[in-house]
Image (cartoon, rainbow, N blue to C red; front, side, top):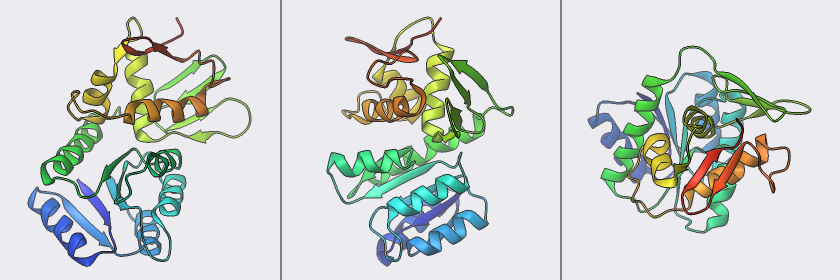
Length: 226
């Protein structure tokens, strides 16, 4: 994969470049937010590793601009902050996932490899569907109800795709972690719940009373429409 690594700490940036290059990836570094936007919008990448705390433009603004320019580009946010508010904000502006520093080398490589598998198996043709008045184009990572279309992250499109594919049954959080995130289902995290909450804000008529993606007590989530 071709990966844009955005990190202002030179030692960590060089370490990430060496790690990912050694794993067989083509890596392009960026040392600040503006450089990340310039490179990310001018060239083609399979994913972005994006630090939250950056000079010139912070990671949130970089994520927002890259998501606007490249709707389907997977973005993995790296942050030293552990608060849920930072993670939620990152997901809301378009990050597909996050890793809190310090992180393990094996964990990071596993996340990157999971992104790579999704790039390889991505559908060649756009997938379009309509649910409860919301039109979704998963290939273009867009959803539209009333007004202009909103951008779905690659992760959000993956959630919709998986739930719709298995709409005859409920899907557990562990299954979503394994099949959409590409991480072990035993991982203790609220990532799935936060991602679903953000997705509902984009596609549901009333996010407080969801009809497209419904919660199944004691199990996880299900496609709510026949």
